Length: 152
Ligand SMILES: [Zn+2]
Image 1 (cartoon, rainbow, N blue to C red):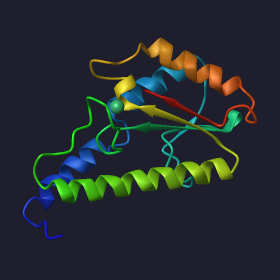
Image 2 (image 1 turned 90 degrees about the vertical axis):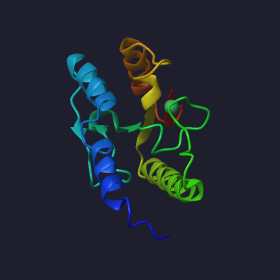
Image 3 (image 1 turned 180 degrees about the horizontal axis):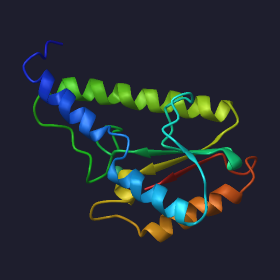
């Protein structure tokens, strides 16, 4: 698909949104750190470059931006009204990449937590305390009982 006209603008937007310390991730890292958790961030050697890796708990946390990761039925996700087909194809590709990364992590013996952006920002956000408590609870559950958690 030819898209020279606003390529520059878009890549600027994308790099802004994809920046490694986007706000929801920052909040979450701060909260976990304050509770004494230690982790690595943006681990490129793992599938999907997890935002937060708690090696001690063999758990990866991926904070998903609702637009780029196509969070359906979410007020933060709306398919752009122009060039719909382009965006749909692009976002579906992102989503399939997410699925692949998640199953690869699980196959490598990791537990996986997906935290959607909307649980940390916007009109439906949860309290940071709620989110961290749910995370903590999941960390203590043996992997045989729960391998993946989604917070939205
Ligand atoms: Zn969302």
